[in-house]
Length: 265
Image (cartoon, rainbow, N blue to C red; front, side, top):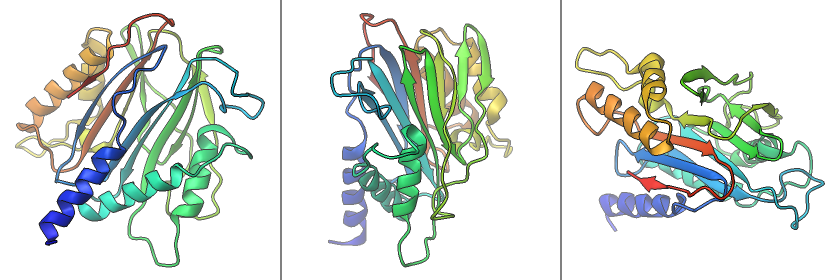
């Protein structure tokens, strides 16, 4: 197998790790995933969580919760893609059975096992969250990742990201959960910095203001917000491809029973 075939194989493995558009009760969402090269350093997952969110929950607890995670490995290309694959493998061994629980517990665990005897050349920024519809509450942890956006009506605000560091810097670091109210029909927008840093022909970055404007002015469904952001981004950079990997997730809790509409770009 030559180097090109090896990279193609790595990209195939990475695509298999991405969620296969799961239908999740109580959630509408849309996403965009555009690697800058064949293999990417971006990672995301969306999952149903109906138990195990807190230690006193059991498998019979039905709350129609959901979780989301988005990560960005420093750099891009095959080396960053390998780190993203390793991150996914570590997460799949996590059990929420000791504090800290929730997103902070998952990131504390992943950070500890992300280290090896050799010096790491990459670190990861991560945003992880779970939504509790019974409490109308978003519980989240940001490991050095850019703050997410929350849209309520036509108002867009940054979510406080705390002071936690990226994964891969301090093996013994313990991450902390934050929380904020999130109601049905609010929109959570999470993304990697490849969106913000995309440049036009004059070298001007797309930036947070353009992103926020696109989110605020779109119709109120996740797919409409996703499309508005990507249209604005590609018009700015003049191409579907940027110099860095670009990932975007738009998530909206809905009253259970509403139809889910999940689309892949």
